[in-house]
Length: 229
Image (tube, rainbow, N blue to C red):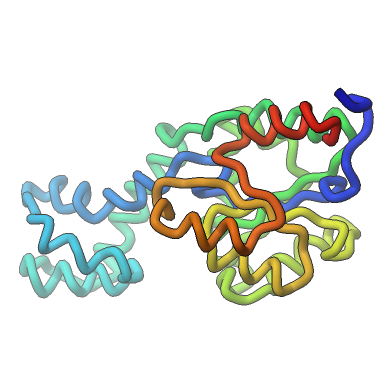
């Protein structure tokens, strides 16, 4: 094994996605619409739930009002669903395998880490602190805060700038192919992670990324065996 006190240059600066990469949270997002309807005593069919896969939360709220004759306004439904997800982040969502160990190894070897997420910063912080890994990150940046999604590179540029790093010297960890592609086109070193929510897109993710792991446990094993950290 390599020198445990050193970190590979490609991972001296690291930007981590959160949902689907560090957290096993996507199942909670996928079941949110169903769980919300069940909280109202409704039992939706698979056909009724199918359109939710491509809808934003406001679109889902309006859809529920139409299909299930729920009283509005849409903002009321959105607030209720957001409340359910907040409860999940604060109490239920777990880490993905190997996340804590991998982060600890990176930090022990001198890496500087941050999180770039679509989730609100306060929820991300609450969840990461609850799970004991918040201390590894210097800061969290959110798409919600900057008003742009990961189909645009600004969040990655912002994170790298706050770390004082150039894109070429910064590793971005992502499970979503579209976000990985954005980071890759912006000049970052991109590491792909498997998540069930993108299981049908793994071939694409592997092509986009410089490295690909099934989870961070594999990353820890492979990098240790290769003598890189």
